[in-house]
Image (cartoon, rainbow, N blue to C red; front, side, top):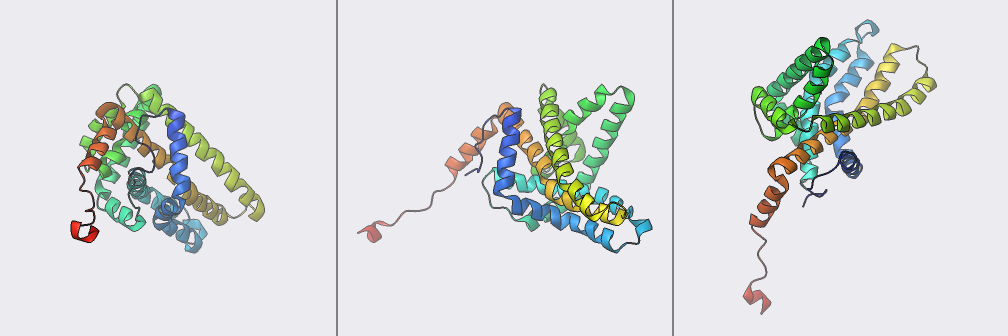
Length: 250
């Protein structure tokens, strides 16, 4: 059974449900992030200081993979299935081409929107938010994912932006609370140390935004497509375990 009830939720309820899923399965979510982002921490440790920026290039390249694997892990938890972090990473890796395409399309549309008139940039954020979920959960290509995401977001863009803004604010506040004491403790003179602390905190906090985005994706599907009823029907159609035979009872 799903670990969180499948029902329409308000924006704050989505954040609350995301926090519940994160708390109850924190080890699995952080494992997904760590499997992908630990190579970045390793690069900070061993690269000569003038080349530390290469870690940022590696981070950009691994970001879509981490996002895709995180979406898959969230979906498994939300639908009441067992989470296998390695399996989620491998499944996301099989869709890496499309995930990289999503990163490019989102970046192009959002940056272009802000450069032009600001407001189109926010509309692009809302209209493309579901692209990673569509790519890994519905296994569609980049252009199909763009159209599908726009359809899901239609009429709900302000709500999508509000939920994502609240999620980003929570992550930003948590990042400050976790990062600054460590910076003060070890000192900020070393670029290497600062980068390692930042990347370590990223591993710990990265799950929340994609959990929120995935729950928002499912919420829109519940509202528009009756996804909750679809899941309930599938549960009813699933064969039930056979009971004890008559001879055994006798």
